[in-house]
Amino acid sequence: MITINCPFCGPRDEREFEYCGPHRQKRPDKINEMTTSAFIDYLTVPENPEGEAKEVWWHRRGCGAWLLVVRNTRTHEIIKVSELDAT
Amino acid sequence: MQKYSLFSLIRNSFTRHRNWPRAWKSVDLKQSYDVIIIGAGGHGLATAYYLAKNYGITNTAVLERGWLGGGNVARNTVTIRSNYLRPESIPFFVKSVEMYEGLSQELNFNLMHSRRSMIDVIHTYPKLREITRKMYNMDIFGATYKPISVAEIRRRIPTLTGGGANSRLPIIAGMVHPEAAVNRHDAVAWGYARAASALGVEVHQHTKVNRLLKNPDGTIKGVSTTKGDVSAGKVAVAVSGHTTQVTDTVDLNLPLRSFNLSAFVSEPVKPMIDVIVNCADLGFYLSQTAKGELVIGGVPDPGQSFRRGSNQLIFERTVGAMLELFPSFKKLKLLRQWGGTLDTAPDSSPIISETEIPGLFITAGWWGGYKAIPAGGLTFANLIATNTPHHLAKSFTLDRFKTLDYILESGTTARV
Image (cartoon, rainbow over all chains, first blue to last red; front, top):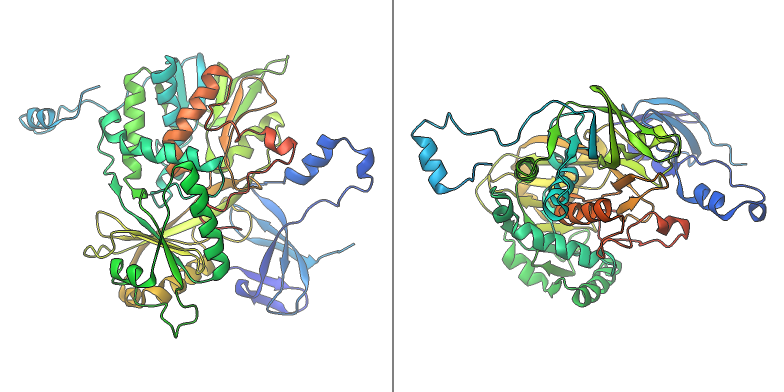
C-alpha cells in the first residue's frame, strides 16, 4: 500500500486518495494560432515516463485537497507531494 | 520440425524421450534481415509466423529482451472472447476467436484450448443498458450475447451464492457469451515459435534492443542491440507495455500510457466453475484452470506504472468483490500473483499501424491482447508485407488520432 504524505494531513493511506490522471502541461493559450496537428498532439500524446512521473491525486476521503505527486512508475516510490497549483 | 503425434510419442518412448529435437533453432545473430520484429511474445511470434506462412517472408529475426514468451503473454488471464462494443472491434475479435479454435491443429501444438462460456453478472441498470447495446451490435457483427435470468446464473454457477436480494448490490441480470474460451498461454508462445522457426524465422532471446536506428533520409535503418547493430528494411515493434520506450529513441510520439494490470491464482481445487465469470460492476472476473486453480483478475492499478507487480489496494478490493458473490471462497488460499504492463491508447482500442518513419511498424495499445494474438499477428503481418492495412484492422491505424476519430471501446477488462 502506498502512503502519501499529504501536506495538510500528514502521511495517509492510499485508499483515502483518488488518482486523477497525469499532471499535464498548461493548455495552450492561443489555440487558433497553432497548427491543428500541434494541438491534437497536445490533446493525445501524453508523457509515459519509466521513472519519475508527475500526477494529480485528490485527497478525497481526507481534507479534499488536490495534490501534485511525483511518483516513480518503476518502483511506485513517492518522491514529492505538494499542493497543486491550480492556476 | 518433427511432427508431434501419438506415433512420435511412442517412437520417442523407446529412447526414454531423450532424443526429442529442440522446438526452435538457436543461431547467431546476422548483420541484416528483411524484417526485424522486436518482442518474442504472442503478437511478435504470431506476426513472424504469418509473415512466413502467408507472404513467404522468412528472412526475419524476432528479438527478445528476456526469454521467449516471458512478457505479457505469460502475464494475463488467458481469457479469449469477442464481446466488444464497436463495429470496428467485433469482427476483428470474432476472427481471432475463430483462429484460436483451429490453432492447435495448425501449429501441431496442443494449446489445451477449452471453450467455456463467459457469464456477465450484472448489478446495475447502466451496466445492463451498456451490455444490451453490446448484445445488439454483436448480433449484427457476428458474435453472440444471450440474456439469462438470475435463476439461470445460479443454476450454472452453483458456488455463486452471494448477490441476493438483501445484499449491497443484488444481481439483476446476466448475459452469456458462448464463444469465450481459455487455453494455455505458454503453448501459444511456444507453438508459434516452433512453427515460425520451422519456416526459417530466427528467434533471438536475451537480445535487448537499446534503440532504433534511422537512415539520413529518415527511413528506418535497423536496431542497435546488446549483441551489436542489425539492419533491416522493416522493423516491427511488438513489445506491449514498453512501446514508448522503444519509439522514444527515434523521437516518435505515440498516444500511449502504460498501466499495471494484476491477477492472482488460488490453490487448485476440484472442478466447480466451468464458465468464466465476469462482474464489471464489482470489478473482478475469474475462471478455473484445467489444473483446478482459480484465476482472478481485477482493475488496473491507479496511475501509470511499469512495475509489473501486485498492488495491495487493488488486491484487497478484488478479493472483497469476489467474496461478495462467492462467500465460500473465503477459505481458499491464494498461491501467487503477477502484474503486466499495458500500454493503452486514449480510446482503449489497439493500434496496428505504420508510423511517420517509413519502414517502422507498431502493434500496441493492447488491452487484453492475449485474445487478439492470432488476428493481431495475421493483420500485422499483412501490413508489414504489403504496406496496406488488413481489412479487419484498417480502423486501428494511427491516423485516427490525427482526426480525433476515436474508436471508444468498453469491451476491455475495465476502465481507468
